[in-house]
Image (tube, rainbow, N blue to C red; front, side):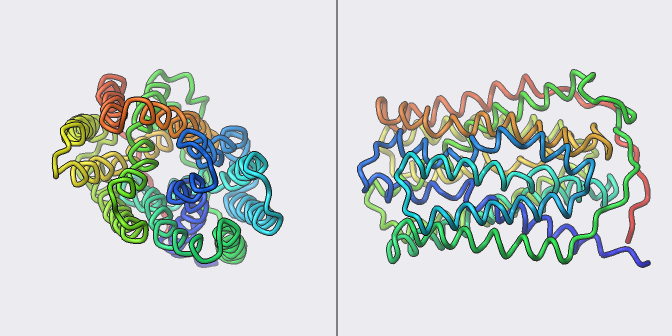
Length: 392
């Protein structure tokens, strides 16, 4: 039987990842709608952070399930169930607290793609092409956010919050059906680069990658969550701000691909990760200073900080998958997603409170400092990943 085209498998994994990202990370564009219903900025931040909070309880479980049962069933099952929960939320008009709980449940179910789609990349691509492939997979996040920025403000304006939730439910259910019908699980067999098939959590290097990634989530989620509200608060039309941010997310996705190519070219995931973290922190501090001084370049610099903060997301994911190998990749990626989303779930609420009390400039400045700390937490490069032929 002829092996399936690996790029087709990657595209389907991207679709699953992107569908979950539309509702997990695209909800900040609905913050003005939630505030219009009487929520404070901190409360709205808690609602949009609910899917990330829900992910915390299931990412490792989904990773274990993918290691045992395969990628196809894991992604399709989780996406389908998430779509059902979102549909129930859309057609029952729950209260805001109940809505938060339902979004958390949808996040817990939809997180299946976060663990399983990375295993598709590890299984179908050799090491010398894996950086670009994982960058495509990670590009699904900004593409999903771009879809949300383009679609949700208009849908919410015409049909309210219920309409936006119904659109999100439809995206998840359709994607679930496509994955179930077309995905082929990759072959197993590559051990970890350093762990040699054993428990990769014996390695301090893996723990440090998790820690650095947690720190880098703070500027990424802060700029992603509050740039839209910042622009609207400065007099921007919500539709125009949404279109701008959609374009920014698409450009950010292209930057992730460039970063993946960079890591393949230099044969390292961690050195580029450390270098980009420096740029991340300095760009964020510059944007915060411009906003604090009410400089006309403030919005543009904030957009630049958002792009840099999202660009290198694939470095850590690729490094984790390669260290863990096929036998542990699902669980290791699940843990990596879990620790990132622990921070991601708290960031909108915490920084919403900081911004509400001290202003945007201090909030963005504090977030940028986390990127600079990540420079020192990122570990030195370990042994190079062994390569092996991959199916055509």
